[in-house]
Image 1 (tube, protein in one colour):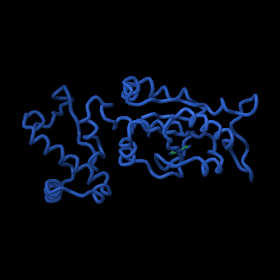
Image 2 (cartoon, rainbow, N blue to C red):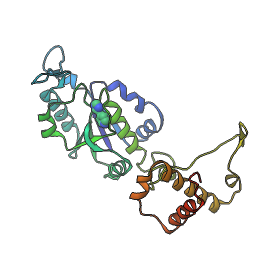
Image 3 (cartoon, rainbow, N blue to C red):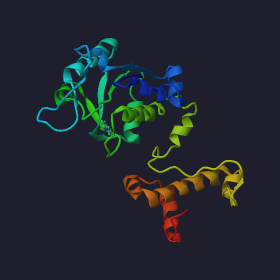
Image 4 (cartoon, rainbow, N blue to C red):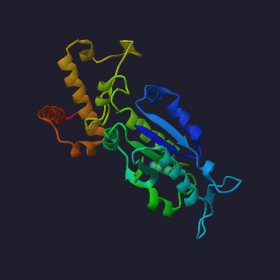
Length: 251
Ligand code: 4F9
């Protein structure tokens, strides 16, 4: 997957291009990430990318012509018709399902992510160029860079063979519509607290059952709306009934 990002702060993306799973996916060629700075497409010698809002009010608005020149330059560099994605609080809510949808696109597809700054981008640019508008949560940030990195990270780790361990993405929170179970490592006793004995039993079936029950119980306690939305298997229904009968939601 070829990912293009349009941002006036391309250096911020070293957070994902130089560290961890995404850096490895780039090195292995699972994804490519190219950065494009609207300042390079400005019309004046000050490299102006923003202007004062018509109608008055605080803040600045990114100029449609400069943004259009930037996207058009990216179009020239891409073969297949790329999807243009703008991140803003006005977009649809990004979640695991959305990430999985992007990750299942054909591997030669290109995506262009646009990170705005200030009060956002002139609406005429959005109407003409943007295919999809996505939000990562109901809050306003100082720019779209972090939301773009969140989306790219969530998508890239779902691409085949980018985690190194394709199993681990399947076991993540939300992959099955449930929160993740608790995890433990050495030492076996920490501050007087032992690791749950089932995890030391070597009984893989019992461990799997315990983990599923933990996931169900945490989801019921912390995010009940996720359970309402999920189609439960016979086993999941049975484990939830057991939890309800015990009257304890702690597992
Ligand atoms: C984008 C916030 C997506 C949440 C972009 C300021 C944003 C955002 N999700 N806030 N610019």
